[in-house]
Length: 390
Image (cartoon, rainbow, N blue to C red; front, side, top):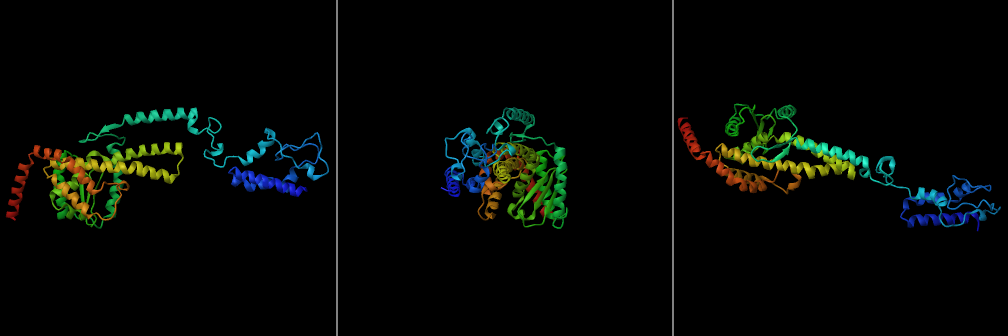
Protein backbone atom coordinates (compact mmCIF):
# COMPACT_ATOMS: atom_id res chain seq x y z
CA UNK A 1 0.00 0.00 0.00
CA UNK A 2 1.37 3.41 -0.93
CA UNK A 3 2.11 6.06 1.66
CA UNK A 4 -0.73 8.30 0.48
CA UNK A 5 -3.31 5.53 0.74
CA UNK A 6 -2.08 4.42 4.19
CA UNK A 7 -2.08 8.02 5.48
CA UNK A 8 -5.59 8.59 4.14
CA UNK A 9 -6.80 5.38 5.82
CA UNK A 10 -5.23 6.45 9.12
CA UNK A 11 -6.81 9.92 8.83
CA UNK A 12 -10.29 8.49 8.25
CA UNK A 13 -9.86 6.11 11.20
CA UNK A 14 -8.84 8.94 13.54
CA UNK A 15 -11.76 11.11 12.44
CA UNK A 16 -14.17 8.21 12.97
CA UNK A 17 -12.82 7.58 16.47
CA UNK A 18 -13.12 11.26 17.35
CA UNK A 19 -16.70 11.41 16.09
CA UNK A 20 -17.70 8.24 17.97
CA UNK A 21 -16.28 9.75 21.17
CA UNK A 22 -18.61 12.75 20.87
CA UNK A 23 -15.80 15.03 19.74
CA UNK A 24 -17.28 16.21 16.48
CA UNK A 25 -15.77 19.62 16.95
CA UNK A 26 -12.32 18.02 16.92
CA UNK A 27 -12.87 15.97 13.73
CA UNK A 28 -11.43 18.55 11.37
CA UNK A 29 -8.40 19.06 13.63
CA UNK A 30 -7.87 15.31 13.80
CA UNK A 31 -8.06 15.02 10.03
CA UNK A 32 -5.32 17.63 9.66
CA UNK A 33 -3.11 15.92 12.23
CA UNK A 34 -3.28 12.57 10.40
CA UNK A 35 -3.15 13.94 6.88
CA UNK A 36 -0.35 12.66 4.58
CA UNK A 37 1.30 16.07 4.59
CA UNK A 38 1.35 16.27 8.38
CA UNK A 39 2.63 12.71 8.83
CA UNK A 40 5.32 13.19 6.25
CA UNK A 41 6.61 16.23 8.17
CA UNK A 42 6.70 14.36 11.46
CA UNK A 43 8.25 11.08 10.29
CA UNK A 44 11.98 10.78 11.02
CA UNK A 45 14.55 10.84 8.27
CA UNK A 46 17.15 9.30 10.56
CA UNK A 47 17.16 6.60 13.16
CA UNK A 48 16.00 8.99 15.95
CA UNK A 49 12.46 10.28 16.40
CA UNK A 50 11.48 13.85 17.11
CA UNK A 51 10.26 14.38 20.66
CA UNK A 52 7.98 17.25 19.50
CA UNK A 53 6.21 15.23 16.82
CA UNK A 54 2.55 14.39 17.13
CA UNK A 55 2.22 10.64 16.73
CA UNK A 56 0.26 7.61 17.83
CA UNK A 57 3.27 5.27 18.16
CA UNK A 58 7.00 5.64 18.16
CA UNK A 59 9.34 4.33 15.47
CA UNK A 60 11.63 1.60 16.72
CA UNK A 61 15.06 3.21 16.81
CA UNK A 62 16.74 -0.18 16.90
CA UNK A 63 15.34 -1.06 13.46
CA UNK A 64 16.00 1.92 11.22
CA UNK A 65 13.27 2.50 8.64
CA UNK A 66 13.81 1.03 5.24
CA UNK A 67 13.71 3.00 2.06
CA UNK A 68 10.09 1.97 1.59
CA UNK A 69 7.60 4.67 2.74
CA UNK A 70 5.11 1.93 3.59
CA UNK A 71 7.45 0.45 6.19
CA UNK A 72 7.78 3.88 7.86
CA UNK A 73 4.05 4.25 8.64
CA UNK A 74 3.60 3.57 12.38
CA UNK A 75 1.65 0.43 13.18
CA UNK A 76 -1.11 0.49 15.81
CA UNK A 77 0.17 -0.55 19.26
CA UNK A 78 -1.33 -0.74 22.75
CA UNK A 79 -1.58 2.78 24.16
CA UNK A 80 1.17 4.00 26.43
CA UNK A 81 1.77 7.25 28.23
CA UNK A 82 4.47 8.30 25.76
CA UNK A 83 2.29 7.50 22.76
CA UNK A 84 -1.10 8.84 23.82
CA UNK A 85 -0.39 12.02 25.77
CA UNK A 86 0.09 14.31 22.79
CA UNK A 87 -3.06 13.25 20.96
CA UNK A 88 -5.21 13.18 24.11
CA UNK A 89 -4.10 16.69 25.03
CA UNK A 90 -5.35 17.98 21.71
CA UNK A 91 -8.50 15.91 21.22
CA UNK A 92 -9.65 15.72 24.85
CA UNK A 93 -8.74 19.20 26.05
CA UNK A 94 -11.62 21.02 27.85
CA UNK A 95 -13.82 23.02 25.49
CA UNK A 96 -15.48 25.29 28.13
CA UNK A 97 -13.44 27.68 30.24
CA UNK A 98 -15.37 28.89 33.26
CA UNK A 99 -12.75 30.28 35.58
CA UNK A 100 -10.37 32.13 33.32
CA UNK A 101 -7.08 30.43 32.51
CA UNK A 102 -7.59 27.49 34.86
CA UNK A 103 -9.86 25.67 32.38
CA UNK A 104 -12.57 25.12 34.98
CA UNK A 105 -10.15 24.28 37.78
CA UNK A 106 -10.30 26.06 41.09
CA UNK A 107 -7.25 27.07 43.03
CA UNK A 108 -7.70 24.08 45.25
CA UNK A 109 -6.81 21.41 42.74
CA UNK A 110 -7.33 19.94 39.31
CA UNK A 111 -11.01 20.13 38.29
CA UNK A 112 -12.10 21.51 41.68
CA UNK A 113 -14.73 24.34 41.60
CA UNK A 114 -13.55 27.56 43.19
CA UNK A 115 -15.99 27.37 46.09
CA UNK A 116 -14.50 24.01 47.19
CA UNK A 117 -11.14 25.66 47.76
CA UNK A 118 -10.33 25.87 51.47
CA UNK A 119 -9.11 29.45 51.20
CA UNK A 120 -12.29 30.58 49.50
CA UNK A 121 -14.36 28.76 52.11
CA UNK A 122 -12.56 30.67 54.86
CA UNK A 123 -13.00 33.99 53.06
CA UNK A 124 -16.65 33.20 52.37
CA UNK A 125 -17.20 32.26 56.00
CA UNK A 126 -15.66 35.51 57.26
CA UNK A 127 -17.74 37.58 54.83
CA UNK A 128 -20.93 35.70 55.74
CA UNK A 129 -20.37 36.12 59.49
CA UNK A 130 -19.58 39.81 59.03
CA UNK A 131 -22.64 40.38 56.86
CA UNK A 132 -24.81 38.45 59.30
CA UNK A 133 -23.58 40.54 62.21
CA UNK A 134 -24.22 43.76 60.29
CA UNK A 135 -27.72 42.55 59.40
CA UNK A 136 -28.65 41.64 62.98
CA UNK A 137 -27.40 44.95 64.41
CA UNK A 138 -29.54 46.90 61.91
CA UNK A 139 -32.87 45.24 62.58
CA UNK A 140 -35.82 47.32 63.77
CA UNK A 141 -39.59 47.03 64.21
CA UNK A 142 -42.13 48.58 61.85
CA UNK A 143 -44.62 50.82 63.70
CA UNK A 144 -48.13 49.41 64.17
CA UNK A 145 -47.50 46.04 62.47
CA UNK A 146 -44.53 44.87 64.55
CA UNK A 147 -42.73 43.40 61.53
CA UNK A 148 -38.96 43.07 61.92
CA UNK A 149 -36.93 44.46 59.06
CA UNK A 150 -33.39 45.43 58.03
CA UNK A 151 -32.78 49.19 57.97
CA UNK A 152 -29.41 50.90 57.56
CA UNK A 153 -30.52 54.21 55.98
CA UNK A 154 -30.97 57.17 58.32
CA UNK A 155 -33.83 59.65 57.99
CA UNK A 156 -31.38 62.36 56.96
CA UNK A 157 -29.93 60.17 54.20
CA UNK A 158 -33.43 59.22 53.07
CA UNK A 159 -34.60 62.82 52.76
CA UNK A 160 -31.39 63.92 51.07
CA UNK A 161 -31.80 61.26 48.37
CA UNK A 162 -35.48 62.19 47.98
CA UNK A 163 -34.74 65.83 47.14
CA UNK A 164 -33.61 64.99 43.62
CA UNK A 165 -36.69 62.84 43.02
CA UNK A 166 -38.92 65.64 44.33
CA UNK A 167 -37.34 68.19 41.99
CA UNK A 168 -37.76 65.82 39.04
CA UNK A 169 -41.47 65.28 39.76
CA UNK A 170 -42.10 69.00 40.20
CA UNK A 171 -40.35 69.70 36.91
CA UNK A 172 -42.13 66.91 35.02
CA UNK A 173 -45.62 68.01 36.11
CA UNK A 174 -44.95 71.75 36.37
CA UNK A 175 -47.67 72.55 33.80
CA UNK A 176 -50.26 70.26 35.42
CA UNK A 177 -49.84 71.24 39.07
CA UNK A 178 -52.97 72.82 40.58
CA UNK A 179 -52.41 75.94 42.72
CA UNK A 180 -52.40 75.71 46.50
CA UNK A 181 -55.72 77.57 46.76
CA UNK A 182 -57.52 75.27 44.32
CA UNK A 183 -60.57 73.47 45.73
CA UNK A 184 -59.06 70.03 45.04
CA UNK A 185 -55.80 70.94 46.77
CA UNK A 186 -57.65 72.26 49.81
CA UNK A 187 -59.82 69.14 49.85
CA UNK A 188 -56.77 66.87 49.89
CA UNK A 189 -55.05 68.91 52.60
CA UNK A 190 -58.13 68.87 54.84
CA UNK A 191 -58.57 65.10 54.69
CA UNK A 192 -54.85 64.43 55.05
CA UNK A 193 -54.60 66.81 58.01
CA UNK A 194 -56.93 64.66 60.09
CA UNK A 195 -54.96 61.51 59.34
CA UNK A 196 -51.62 63.18 60.11
CA UNK A 197 -52.93 64.42 63.45
CA UNK A 198 -54.24 60.96 64.35
CA UNK A 199 -50.85 59.46 63.46
CA UNK A 200 -48.98 62.04 65.56
CA UNK A 201 -46.82 63.13 62.61
CA UNK A 202 -47.45 66.89 62.67
CA UNK A 203 -43.74 67.66 63.12
CA UNK A 204 -42.95 66.56 59.55
CA UNK A 205 -42.79 69.19 56.81
CA UNK A 206 -45.75 67.90 54.79
CA UNK A 207 -46.49 69.11 51.28
CA UNK A 208 -49.54 68.13 49.22
CA UNK A 209 -49.65 68.59 45.46
CA UNK A 210 -52.58 67.81 43.18
CA UNK A 211 -51.76 67.01 39.55
CA UNK A 212 -54.40 67.57 36.90
CA UNK A 213 -54.32 64.24 35.07
CA UNK A 214 -56.66 61.37 34.25
CA UNK A 215 -54.14 58.98 35.76
CA UNK A 216 -55.59 57.11 38.74
CA UNK A 217 -52.63 57.38 41.04
CA UNK A 218 -51.11 58.89 44.16
CA UNK A 219 -47.67 58.55 45.72
CA UNK A 220 -45.49 59.92 48.48
CA UNK A 221 -41.80 60.82 48.55
CA UNK A 222 -39.67 60.72 51.70
CA UNK A 223 -40.03 63.82 53.81
CA UNK A 224 -43.83 63.98 53.50
CA UNK A 225 -44.17 65.06 49.87
CA UNK A 226 -47.55 63.70 48.71
CA UNK A 227 -48.79 63.83 45.11
CA UNK A 228 -52.41 63.08 44.15
CA UNK A 229 -53.70 62.84 40.57
CA UNK A 230 -57.19 64.19 39.91
CA UNK A 231 -58.03 60.98 38.03
CA UNK A 232 -58.33 59.10 41.32
CA UNK A 233 -60.83 61.50 42.90
CA UNK A 234 -63.89 60.06 41.07
CA UNK A 235 -62.82 56.59 42.23
CA UNK A 236 -62.54 57.84 45.82
CA UNK A 237 -66.04 59.42 45.53
CA UNK A 238 -66.08 60.92 49.04
CA UNK A 239 -63.92 61.89 52.00
CA UNK A 240 -63.78 58.34 53.33
CA UNK A 241 -62.61 57.02 49.97
CA UNK A 242 -60.01 59.78 49.66
CA UNK A 243 -58.91 59.04 53.23
CA UNK A 244 -58.23 55.45 52.12
CA UNK A 245 -55.92 56.74 49.39
CA UNK A 246 -54.15 59.29 51.59
CA UNK A 247 -53.97 56.93 54.57
CA UNK A 248 -52.10 54.46 52.38
CA UNK A 249 -49.55 57.10 51.31
CA UNK A 250 -49.10 58.47 54.83
CA UNK A 251 -48.56 54.89 56.01
CA UNK A 252 -45.66 54.56 53.55
CA UNK A 253 -44.09 57.61 55.18
CA UNK A 254 -44.75 56.36 58.71
CA UNK A 255 -43.19 52.96 57.93
CA UNK A 256 -40.33 54.54 55.94
CA UNK A 257 -40.78 52.06 53.12
CA UNK A 258 -38.60 54.10 50.74
CA UNK A 259 -35.61 53.81 53.08
CA UNK A 260 -36.36 50.14 53.65
CA UNK A 261 -36.29 49.54 49.90
CA UNK A 262 -32.84 51.12 49.69
CA UNK A 263 -31.68 48.89 52.53
CA UNK A 264 -33.24 45.78 51.01
CA UNK A 265 -31.56 46.52 47.67
CA UNK A 266 -28.20 46.03 49.39
CA UNK A 267 -29.31 42.58 50.54
CA UNK A 268 -30.47 41.74 47.02
CA UNK A 269 -27.12 42.80 45.56
CA UNK A 270 -25.24 40.71 48.15
CA UNK A 271 -27.35 37.64 47.35
CA UNK A 272 -26.92 38.31 43.64
CA UNK A 273 -23.14 38.39 44.05
CA UNK A 274 -23.18 35.01 45.81
CA UNK A 275 -25.38 33.53 43.09
CA UNK A 276 -23.02 34.88 40.44
CA UNK A 277 -19.98 33.30 42.12
CA UNK A 278 -21.55 29.91 42.81
CA UNK A 279 -23.79 29.38 39.78
CA UNK A 280 -22.24 31.80 37.26
CA UNK A 281 -25.52 32.84 35.54
CA UNK A 282 -25.65 35.38 32.77
CA UNK A 283 -26.17 39.04 33.70
CA UNK A 284 -29.68 39.01 32.24
CA UNK A 285 -30.66 35.87 34.15
CA UNK A 286 -29.29 37.35 37.35
CA UNK A 287 -31.33 40.54 36.90
CA UNK A 288 -34.51 38.60 36.15
CA UNK A 289 -34.03 36.39 39.20
CA UNK A 290 -33.44 39.42 41.43
CA UNK A 291 -36.56 41.21 40.14
CA UNK A 292 -38.96 38.26 40.18
CA UNK A 293 -37.54 36.53 43.23
CA UNK A 294 -36.74 39.46 45.52
CA UNK A 295 -37.57 43.04 44.50
CA UNK A 296 -41.15 42.60 43.22
CA UNK A 297 -42.30 40.42 46.15
CA UNK A 298 -40.71 42.95 48.53
CA UNK A 299 -42.56 45.82 46.84
CA UNK A 300 -45.90 44.01 47.11
CA UNK A 301 -45.22 43.28 50.78
CA UNK A 302 -44.67 46.98 51.49
CA UNK A 303 -47.85 47.92 49.63
CA UNK A 304 -49.87 45.39 51.62
CA UNK A 305 -48.40 46.68 54.86
CA UNK A 306 -49.26 50.27 53.88
CA UNK A 307 -52.87 49.16 53.33
CA UNK A 308 -52.94 47.62 56.80
CA UNK A 309 -51.41 50.65 58.55
CA UNK A 310 -53.48 53.07 56.50
CA UNK A 311 -56.70 51.32 57.52
CA UNK A 312 -55.81 51.82 61.18
CA UNK A 313 -54.87 55.45 60.61
CA UNK A 314 -58.14 56.39 58.95
CA UNK A 315 -60.04 54.59 61.72
CA UNK A 316 -58.15 56.63 64.34
CA UNK A 317 -58.94 59.78 62.34
CA UNK A 318 -62.65 58.85 62.47
CA UNK A 319 -63.04 58.14 58.77
CA UNK A 320 -65.23 55.13 58.07
CA UNK A 321 -62.83 52.22 57.38
CA UNK A 322 -65.62 50.26 55.68
CA UNK A 323 -65.39 52.65 52.76
CA UNK A 324 -61.90 51.35 51.98
CA UNK A 325 -63.22 48.05 50.60
CA UNK A 326 -65.76 49.94 48.50
CA UNK A 327 -63.06 52.24 47.12
CA UNK A 328 -60.79 49.35 46.11
CA UNK A 329 -63.73 47.50 44.60
CA UNK A 330 -64.38 50.51 42.39
CA UNK A 331 -60.69 50.59 41.51
CA UNK A 332 -60.81 46.89 40.63
CA UNK A 333 -63.71 47.52 38.27
CA UNK A 334 -61.59 50.13 36.48
CA UNK A 335 -58.72 47.74 35.89
CA UNK A 336 -58.73 46.26 32.42
CA UNK A 337 -56.90 43.40 30.78
CA UNK A 338 -55.10 40.36 32.13
CA UNK A 339 -52.73 41.09 34.98
CA UNK A 340 -50.06 38.78 36.39
CA UNK A 341 -49.66 39.53 40.09
CA UNK A 342 -46.07 38.25 40.27
CA UNK A 343 -45.01 40.81 37.63
CA UNK A 344 -46.52 43.82 39.46
CA UNK A 345 -45.11 46.09 42.14
CA UNK A 346 -48.60 46.40 43.70
CA UNK A 347 -51.11 43.72 44.68
CA UNK A 348 -54.23 43.41 42.52
CA UNK A 349 -57.13 45.54 43.77
CA UNK A 350 -59.35 42.50 44.32
CA UNK A 351 -56.62 40.96 46.49
CA UNK A 352 -56.41 44.16 48.49
CA UNK A 353 -60.15 43.98 49.16
CA UNK A 354 -59.73 40.47 50.58
CA UNK A 355 -56.96 41.63 52.91
CA UNK A 356 -58.89 44.72 54.04
CA UNK A 357 -61.87 42.57 54.96
CA UNK A 358 -59.58 40.44 57.12
CA UNK A 359 -58.31 43.52 58.97
CA UNK A 360 -61.72 45.21 59.20
CA UNK A 361 -62.76 43.89 62.66
CA UNK A 362 -59.64 45.40 64.23
CA UNK A 363 -60.16 48.67 62.35
CA UNK A 364 -63.79 48.91 63.47
CA UNK A 365 -62.70 48.32 67.06
CA UNK A 366 -60.26 51.22 66.72
CA UNK A 367 -63.01 53.35 65.18
CA UNK A 368 -65.37 52.71 68.13
CA UNK A 369 -62.63 53.33 70.71
CA UNK A 370 -61.99 56.74 69.13
CA UNK A 371 -65.65 57.66 69.78
CA UNK A 372 -65.92 58.45 66.11
CA UNK A 373 -69.71 58.18 66.06
CA UNK A 374 -69.97 61.24 68.31
CA UNK A 375 -67.19 63.08 66.50
CA UNK A 376 -68.76 62.47 63.10
CA UNK A 377 -72.18 63.54 64.38
CA UNK A 378 -70.77 66.89 65.49
CA UNK A 379 -68.90 67.19 62.19
CA UNK A 380 -72.11 66.60 60.24
CA UNK A 381 -73.92 69.24 62.31
CA UNK A 382 -71.10 71.71 61.65
CA UNK A 383 -71.14 71.03 57.91
CA UNK A 384 -74.91 71.46 57.73
CA UNK A 385 -74.71 74.74 59.65
CA UNK A 386 -71.95 75.98 57.36
CA UNK A 387 -73.97 75.12 54.26
CA UNK A 388 -77.06 76.84 55.69
CA UNK A 389 -75.03 79.96 56.44
CA UNK A 390 -73.67 80.17 52.92
